[in-house]
Length: 275
Image (tube, rainbow, N blue to C red):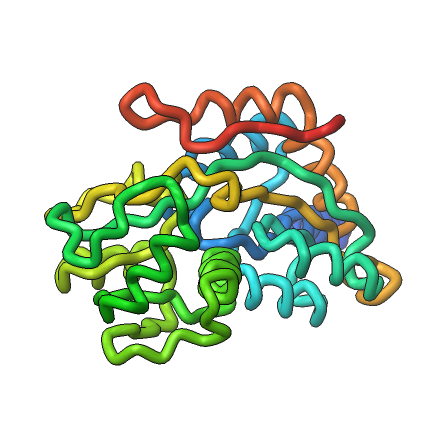
């Protein structure tokens, strides 16, 4: 009987310990940071290189939702994520002005390039992206647009506008509504032209006869920024995790990890945080 009483006496302790374990597990899960990011940071392979280093430094897990920049910003506006890692500076600054992000910090840059078939039937090869777009429109070149409100799509529309076309309407212009990798696959399989960030291009294996045709224009500069979602708008967001990520990715340590990501000895991104 004494043993039975001792077991019953210990039971509350066991249950209390189990509760502590469950609470600890919940806290660990709650610590995970949810980040919405452009597809280029994932499809270039950067995150597979960057995020393990961040976890090793901070212990924080990151769950990435890779979508077009426009969709990512919408997620931040709704409070569906904790932090944004995107590349459409005008849209990012607007999000801060609206109060949905506390700040926008530059992290890194690369550039856009126009790729297309090596034979270049529209004769766009050169260093002037606006001139290339004019030639594409005049020749009715087979052009694949992401059409997904991504940072790359926003840049593409700027180049069309600068070339005199508010919205391209020629018959062989097609919008896939897809990420950078799928858009490149479509261009490769159809002999099309497509605007891409250099990072995704360098990591892209299914090139067929695609080559870089236009690069080096200063208008092709592609800046990435990081924005924590504002807890004043969405009190549930993981502000601690977001602050750790923003602090680390703009620190000397985080910037060194970005600089260290290369394919074939060629860097895909160039860190330029101002911290």
